[in-house]
Length: 345
Length: 273
Image (cartoon, rainbow over all chains, first blue to last red):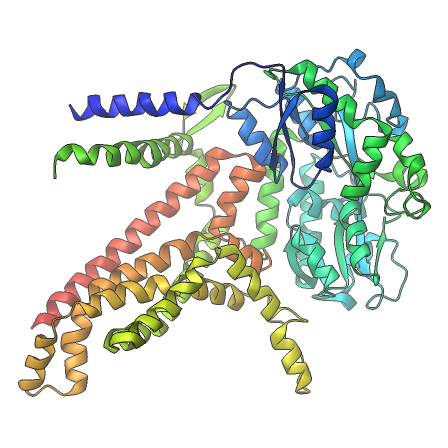
């Protein structure tokens, strides 16, 4: 009796849950983006132009997005994964090929941003925003030139340094200093980088995520491992701050637009991606977000202060020294082990 | 009440507790080799490596410290609260509850402003001509955050237990010549133990598994059990190892709690004589 009752409840519950999904409709578009990563007035503009209604949801990390989509049951049409996540999702067959005949505005995307390592054929993704990994520093606390990762290991700045709490980002400067690739899958190299990060740990005030930005704006530290987009926004709020992309090279990251397998409105998704590649739209968007655009038409319209800023627009020389993060497959577990050892040590 | 009234609860329990627990056990006890899922103890072998034992031990010590401090502050507070009458009592209870209405993250964030280098305390020190101190991103700050966030979970159950004590028992003890100390340690404290037990449980459990407080106030510099599990699920995608660590920590909590309950019930009986 009890069991039968529970079975009925379970069926009722699952019926309720699946009932939430709407019917197939070419007039609806489910978009899944990072928080604060779109000038939301553009949603209305797109809806007016096309008559397609956008249902907009946001996520906080690639992994959140990946977990939700791989668990099934979601029905997004456009998603915004970062580089290594695009690669992982392609490998796992989670992305649809994009039909570029529906994307005339794709020609606005700069050539240096096409066919990158994470999507070599450029069939599955369209780049959205990009930036570099570098050092945000406070000019009142650092009076030497900042041009090398070595400064993050300088004892002068003990307890004045912020590092990212995400392991791939934290390992990047250590690996580069040792002359290794940020995508290394060599255990020896990883071990060496680990020892170097353990040696650095007493100098680190904290391993932080987004909070590092507020900390640097508040003058709580001298140096911080920071992505250029965040650095740009911080510098607007505190003029004592400056940004350097170290000469040894670093990481260049991309956030891309892609269509997940099983999308119900693929044509609408392509129309939306095409819309975001429009010069005017991309211009509005990059000014709102503060991250660097990949759209050359938008770039030409930018105010000079942005175009000439090394934070916003890395020179070709700097850009050439940077690598994108690639998906490491199962080797990521070795990074995790090494990272835990750093935090335990 | 009819027994059928319990069915929604049973369904709730099945969907949100039992099934997830079975999934966690399934992930913990299996591993993938050559694309096939197999029963294997590998995840547990890894969870008992020295490095992860240190992580667990550290979480245990920090949670224990927070629980002890909560008890030392919480018991007298509950005692004072229980002895108050009328409007004063409701005002004090209200003051105790109001902070809990605020978002947990927000409350924890506000400690950043108090403890950081250019924060309230350090600015006050500086104004007095004293050197600034590193208060934030220390283990002490983590314990402070736990105490601050979980203190009311200690006070409220003890307060309830104390309020329920029959005043005539205390009067009887006094009539029979017991001094203040005797009344407290042989009558009041033993009778309040059920409250202490739930207070300790309600502080210790969230304290040992929290990952938000160590991340925000500890600067992520100590690997603690909560962040280790978070890392496995959200950043590494190793659900099997994450599940195994969860199972180990659940086991340790069950052992610690049953030891605690055993000691408690011994003392409880002893106190009656």
